[in-house]
Image 1 (cartoon, one colour):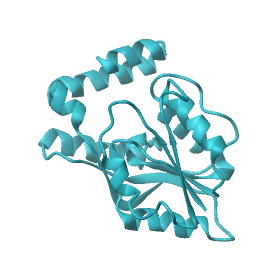
Image 2: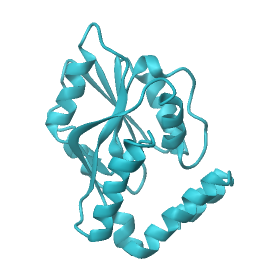
Image 3: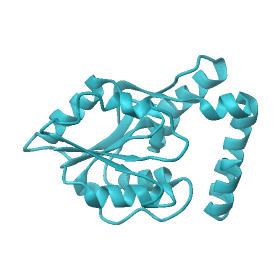
Image 4: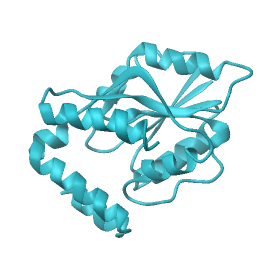
Length: 206
């Protein structure tokens, strides 16, 4: 079985719902939606979703991303393999808006961060074998996907499957592409300097 965990929030759009069309009654799929009433931080919601899951493969589906049916079918097939090698990874990233800077961000995320550094952000829609999970995610307000990647890549390097996770560019639309790009770099620097995640999250939410 494939367990699809969606850490929903109050401001999401409907992209993730498009991914789930036709899967509601699928015998090999369970859908677990965890909202902010169950857990304040996204890490809390992902932890809760994982412990509710029954599947052999887990998909952490970003609430503002869309996966095509073929991408989820691959994970369903993978979850049904009796002798399955331990694996994890994500899908190729692409924004739902066309812009040179956004294309560069996706390229960097796909081919530098994922393939060379082994870090998979949640908007790639992270999938993993349940056997990889040996301890809960650190409860922090931001960069929980980086923490997860650092754990998993110690066991095996991530796979980037050849289907696109189409992600909303809503923050770039709202704040401006240049401003949001600079803010993202400031947040990464703050994470590297081990600044409190609650402080970094407050910057991100602004």
